[in-house]
Image (cartoon, rainbow over all chains, first blue to last red; front, top):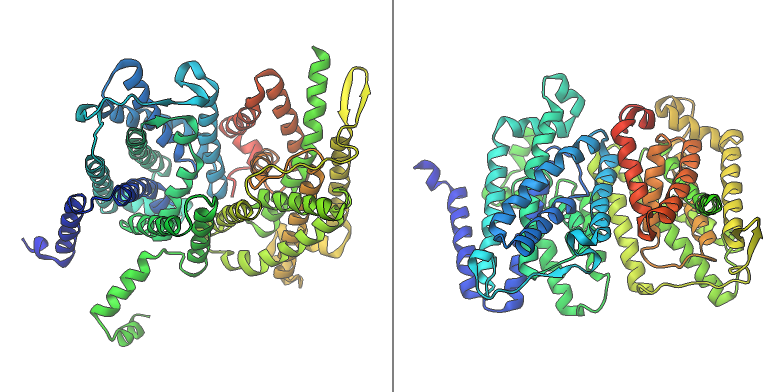
Length: 333
Length: 289
C-alpha cells in the first residue's frame, strides 16, 4: 500500500493516464503521427539501451533486427495469409535466433570495432534482401495490402489504435528494463559495462550474459519493425534495414541518458519534437537539417553532459526538492 | 576467362590504392591517439569537394590541388584533435565512438545542405585516356591516383622512421607513458598524427576526383572499406592496412565481376565477418581494443 502512495508511483500513474487519454483529445493527424513516432523510437531506444546502455555494447546495427521483424511478418502475411500479430512474435523469434550467430562473431570485438562489425551485419542483411528478389521482392519492395479496418490483421482506419499499440510496446519495454535493472542480470550487465575483464574475474559469465541481453534486445527491436511496416503499409530493404534506425536507437539513448530507465524516452521526446519543429519552420524540402541538428545535439551532450540530459532533469528536481543543497553536497563530496 | 580475372584484379588493385590512403589514416589515428575516427570518410568527401571547386572555379587540375587539399585537411585535423578529440580521451568507449560518429553525421549533412545531394563529376583531359596492352585496359586517371597513393604511403613511412616527429609518434603509439617520460609532448604528437591522417584522407579525395563523382555521402564506402582493411591488417599496423586495402580492392572487384554489380560490398563485409569468426586472433592479435 505504501508503494502505491509513493510520489514516483503517483507520477507514473498520472503520466499513464495522460498518455491513454491523449489520442481522444488530440485529433490532428500530424500531431498523433509525431506521438506514434516518439513512442516507437522510444521503444527502439529502450531495446537498444538494454544492451548498449547497461552493458555498454555499443551496437550500430540494430536495424538488422528491425528489418528481420518487418520482413518476417510481411512475408508471413502476404505469402501465407498469417496475421501480423503472430508474425510479430515470429519476427521477434527470428531476430532472437539471428542474434546468436551475429553476437558470436561481433562479441569477439570490443568497443569501436564491435560497433563497426554490427554495422556490417545490418548492411549485409540489407544487401542480401536487395539481391534475392525471388525471396522478398528485392529492391522494389512491396506495399502491404490494405484490408480496411481489420484489427486481427493489425490494420486500422484510425490512427489511435496504432498509438495504443506503440504505447503498449513502450510500456512493455520499460517494464522489462525495470525488472532487469533490479535483477542479478542488471548488476552483471552494469559490471560488464564498467569493465568486462574485471567482471569476468569476479565470476560473471560475460559471454552468456551478453548473449542473453542481445537476444532480448533483438526480440524487442523486431517487434518495432513489424509495427512500423504495418503502420506505413510498405516495405523495402532500404526502409527495413535503414542505417538511420540503428543510429536513432543509439542516439536517443545517449542524448537522454545511457543506461537509465527513462533516458531513451527523454531523448526521443527531445529529438523528435526538435525535428518536428524544424520541419514546420523550414518545411521538409531541405534535406539534411534534421540530422545536422541531431548531430550537433549529440556532440554537445558528449562534450558537456556525457551521462545524458536525464541527469539535468533529476538534478533540477533534487535542487527544487531539497534546496539549499550546498551543505549536503559539501559533506558528500 | 583469365583475361577477365586479370582485368578485375587490375581494377581492384588501382582502387585499392585509394582505400589504402584512407585505411592508413584510420590506422594511424588508432595507433597513436587510440581513437577510431568514424568521420574519416567525410574528410575524403571534403577533399573531393575542395578539388572539385578549385577545378571548376580556378581551373586547377585535381592532381595539383592535392597541394592545397592536403594542407587544408592537415589544419582541420590539428583543430579536430585539439578542440574535440582531446576532450574525450580516456573517457571510455561511448564518448569516443559517438563524438567522431556525430561528426561524420554532421559533416555529411552540412555538405548536403551546402552542396545538395547532386553528384558532381570533373572531366579532365586524362579522364578518358587508357593504356591498352595484351587485351587489358588500364585507365590513366586511376593509374596515376594509384601511383601517387603509393608514393604518399612511402613518404609517410620515411616520415615515421627518419624524422624526430615520426619517431615520437611511433614511440607514443607503442608506450605513451614511456614516451612522455622521454620528453615527448603527447598533445603535440596527437595533433600531428590526426593532421597527417586527415591530410591522407584529403589526398584520397583529390586523387579520386578525376574518375569518381563527389557527393555528400561519397566518403561512406571508403570509410567502411578502411575499417575492414584496418581490422584485417591488424589494428594500428600501417603496412598491414596497406596490404589489406589492396586485397580488399581486389576482392571487391572480383565480387563485382563474378557475383554481380551490387555485390562488391557483400563480398567485403562477408570477408570481415568470416575473418572475425574464424581468425580473430590472427587478425586483431587478441582483443581489438
